[in-house]
Amino acid sequence: MKSKLFVRRAILAAFVVLMLAASGKQAAAQENETCLGCLWDCYGWAAQQNGIWQIWIGGLTCEASYIECFKRTLIGR
Amino acid sequence: MRQFVVTVFAVVGAVETIGAAPLQQRVVSLAPFAVEHVIVGRARCGATTWMLTDPPVLVRVDIARFSLAKTPVSGFSRAERPFGLACLASDELWTLADSRTLARMSTSGAVLGRYKLPQPRLNVFGVGEVLLLQQPPLSPNIPLLAAARTGDLTRSQPWPGPMAPPQVTKKADLASGLVSCGVEHDNRLPCWIASQSRITISDGTSAHTSIVQPAFVDDSAVDRRTPLQDVAATSSTGLWILTSAVARESGRRVGGRLTRSNLRGESLASIDLQPRARLIVDATDSSAIVLTTAGTLVEVRAR
Image 1 (tube, each protein chain N blue to C red):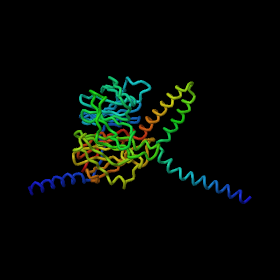
Image 2 (image 1 turned 90 degrees about the vertical axis):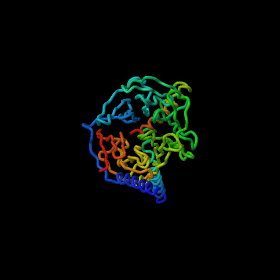
Image 3 (image 1 turned 135 degrees about the vertical axis):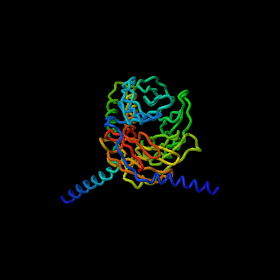
Image 4 (image 1 turned 180 degrees about the horizontal axis):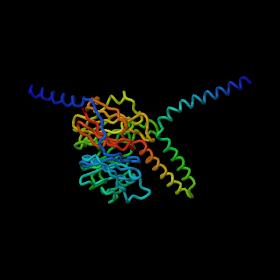
C-alpha cells in the first residue's frame, strides 16, 4: 500500500518537475503559441483534403500562414 | 593642428552634452488617432511617415502638422497579406503582397502593379533609391538583406547588415532569422535581428557601416525575446533606441523606454514612456516623435 502511494507521489513529483522545466520553454515560445495552434488546426484541415496533392498544397499553405502569423506577432508593432 | 584637435573635442563634447541633457515628453498631436491593427510596415518619404497595417490600411503621418490620416488600401486579394513597407522617390510605396510578390502602391492606397520575385522574401524596407529585401536564413552566415532596384528586381546585391546565425540552434527558432529595420537618416539605415540588441547601421557601403551594441539594453527591464522595439538614426553621432517593455499591451509588444545613445552604444539620456510607444515616427538629433498605444504622437526632447 505504502509503495503504491510512493510511486504515485514520485510520478506526481516527476510531473511537476517536468511542468516547471517546460514552463521556461513555454514562456520563450509565448508569441509562438497562437501561431502554432493555428498551424496544428490548419494541418488538421489539410489532412482532410481529398487527394495527396491537395493535402500537400494544403500543408504548404499552412506553413506559409504560420510564418506570416509569426512575423506579425514578433516584428509587427 | 592643435587648435583643430581642440575644436573637434569641443564639438564632440558639446554634442554629447546635448545628448546628456534630461529628456522630457509632451503630446503634440491634437487628438488621439486609433490605429487598431498591427503595424506591419513603416516608411518615410520626406516629411511624411507612412505605416501599413494588417488588414491593409495606409496611415499617413504629417510630421510638420503632427496629424494622422487613414487611407484604405484597395487591390489586394483575400489570399494576399501585405507585409513590410518601403517608400522610394516620388512617393512610391512598396510592400510584399506575398513572399514572392512585390506590390507597388500609390499614396492614395491603390495597388498599381505586382512584380514576381525569383526567390521568397520575408520583409521589405527602403533606403534611398533601393529596396531591401529580407531573405530567409537558409544558410549560415549569409547577409539577410539584399538590395534591389525597382528597374530590375531579379538582380540584388548583399546589404551589409544582419547576418544569418552561424548555426541553427533550435529547429523552431524563427526569431533569430527575422530582421527589423528602423528610421533611416541620410540613407543610413539601422537594422537588427529581432531577438538581438546588436544594431548594424549602413548606407550599403562597408566604409559607412557601423555596429552598435547598446550595453544598457542588457541592464534594462526589456522583453528578452525582442529587446528592441525600434531604432532611429539621426546624425553620424547618435541614435534613438526604443527598447521593449516587459509586459505586452492588448497582446502586442510595445516600447517602454526611449534612450538617446551614441554610436558606442552608451546611453546619454533616457525616459520611460507612458503611455507605451508602438514605434518611432520621426527623429532628429535633439528630438524624437513616437506613436503611442493611446494613438497620440508624443515628442521626446532634450531639455
